[in-house]
Length: 278
Ligand SMILES: Cc1cc2nc3c(=O)[nH]c(=O)nc-3n(C[C@H](O)[C@H](O)[C@H](O)COP(=O)(O)OP(=O)(O)OC[C@H]3O[C@@H](n4cnc5c(N)ncnc54)[C@H](O)[C@@H]3O)c2cc1C
Image (cartoon, rainbow, N blue to C red; front, side):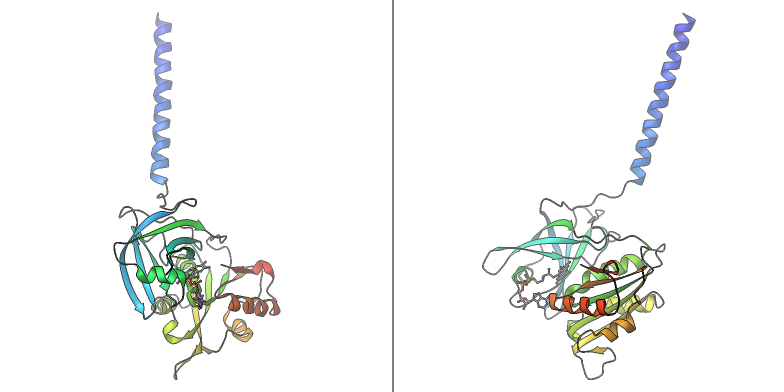
């Protein structure tokens, strides 16, 4: 009888131990879980436009609400989303965009959009009003960000190609564990075309030893201290890290610019493993 009793007690203790281990594991997983993202790579999901801020005659910042005030978008650094809309003929168009916000910005995400007069998706954005919904799918892209994956990034951006660069730069500089240096060359037609200038200048002031930006304009204003014309080999040599196994040069710009940049980089001795195009 005693043996049966002690066996029961033993079984009960084991059961309690299992329950305790299970509860502790569940609690550990719960407190360490990453907030779940709001994107679906296979299906478009709708996000409500809650704010639209005109930044210049053809550029606006669009703020979209996430499902709850504590939701995060869940877009890996350096990747982009696909936005779906309708062009002026009512036909569906899907284009890639990189939010300027990170997952440290909770409850919303921002897109800075340049709207071209003849652009198909540009038409959709131009027509969007607060309260409208945008269909978004993602994440997309091959770029994988890891803190300290290189000693330094050189970045060659043209026009709206600044948005992935801005996102990666913010992620690096806002991460106290990341010591990567960033050297950006940013090309535009005119001064008014420069996107996120205030934000970029702010980063250069706040992180003088970690981040530098060199602006290049085709049509500069009279008093201009930046580069003039197109991004040249000499500019890359002066403002980007020299070829080395622990650096990477990122590119994002209009296709003709990307093509010329590859030729410059190759002739300066950068190998394929040192280059990446968004
Ligand atoms: C990874 C990635 C991220 C991007 N992120 C952003 C972003 O955050 N914000 C943003 O505004 N765009 C971004 N773009 C560009 C965006 O995807 C579209 O190409 C852009 O919005 C134009 O689309 P559209 O349909 O309006 O123009 P389209 O119908 O494709 O083009 C119509 C006309 O618009 C003009 N045009 C279009 N694109 C350019 C250009 N790049 N330079 C000069 N003239 C042009 C040309 O005159 C062209 O003939 C990104 C692109 C990539 C690849």
